[in-house]
Image (spheres, rainbow, N blue to C red):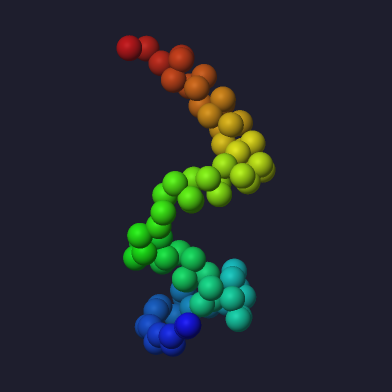
Length: 76
């Protein structure tokens, strides 16, 4: 069940939401941003879901392999 919420935001932020997110998608955008901060999620299930996202895992592996070289080059 959804509830209506009235909030006040800066005019430029409001304009940016319409330009970037698009009319009709703002509520979902805000809910997706806020949800992890206000609801306790089952982390095991969340990590399992992320692990099944092959594109995300590929990007994470690529990032990890690139950054490991940065650490190896540092002096101690």
